Amino acid sequence: MASAPIPGTPVFTSEFAMKGYALNKMCFSLNSAANRAAFLADEDAYCDKFGMSGEQKDAIRSRSVAALIAAGGNVYYLAKFAGIFHLNVQDLGAQQTGVSVEAFKAKLNEYARFNADVNAGRLSNV
Amino acid sequence: MSKIMGSVATSHIPGIGNAIAKNLQQDPYWKPFFDGFIPAREWLAKNVPDVAVVVYNDHGLNFFLDKMPTFAIGAAHVYTSEDEGWGIPTVAPLAGNAALSWAIIDGVVRDEFDVTTCQEMLVDHAVTIPLQLLWPEGPPPVQIVPVAVNTVQHPLPSPARCLKFGQSIGRAIEAYAPDLKVLVISSGGLSHQLEGERAGFINPQFDALCLNALINEPEKLTGYTTLEIVELAGSQGAEILNWITGRGIMQGKSREVLRNYHIPISNTASALQILEQV
Image (tube, rainbow over all chains, first blue to last red):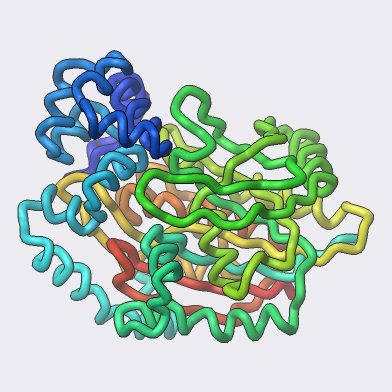
């Protein structure tokens, strides 16, 4: 894409769609309870079935969202991997932004001060 | 002839499904969100639809990257939900209206929108959560036509394309001979971003612009590129494309009946907006 990158914002372009295909396919397979059990029983063997790269397997072992995204992971599929460990999107956000989960939630809560204005139809000057 | 009565646009955050399953509607965190649906259900009691056309994005239940349609329309008699991997309960099978689906498909293809047609289609939380919010007592008393928009793999369809696609769907509905009352459900958003160092990004100013523009000036949103939408609304805020498509389905002018914007629900600026076609 010709446009300038958006700071702090990975965009799931064709480059990542190709690079991450095996990783995302493994994550997609985790929709099935039987596959989740197979993953938990031997995750390296399970990942090998999908032809994942060394970088992708390392990223899975590291549980690092940033590494998984860099390896081509898409967050919609990674959510299924995170779900195995009962991690929600605040946990993922805290990990990626280098703050505690409480601090991440506090940052989200700060936006609540805008609720009344948006509900009243104000604030629409971007 | 069939008639479009209005649209309900709502966020579909997965946590809502878990909150419903755990009966947390009165919990202080969830109450401001769920309370918005009390007047929505009152409106629905007075404006009873036969069919709901649900515009949404699939999150890796029916579609994977092996085959990723830009626009897909369900043409099934029954739609089922399945395990999404992270614990949301499934819902009872949902009735489709295949005849209306095919009338819409005929119309949009005639208008040069070459959609993927799905006689089997699993529907994920983006379809089931809005239906549960509007009809919490049980299976929704409507048939559905799911319309899936790719908001996952770039290039995404542009806002301008989504608005025109919606308008084409709307024309097909209003040209459909049976006297059906059709509700549009637009699912997703508003601003949020799950990944990257900007995870947790929310943009109330842009959300306000969208909510105001969607009432009667949706063309204000059609000048943006999809990457500009990602920058302004966050990566997953691109789900506003579902709302723009849904607004396109509504023909002509609309009146805002209800708005409930509430931050935060999970990582998201949640929103509920009901528009009545006038």
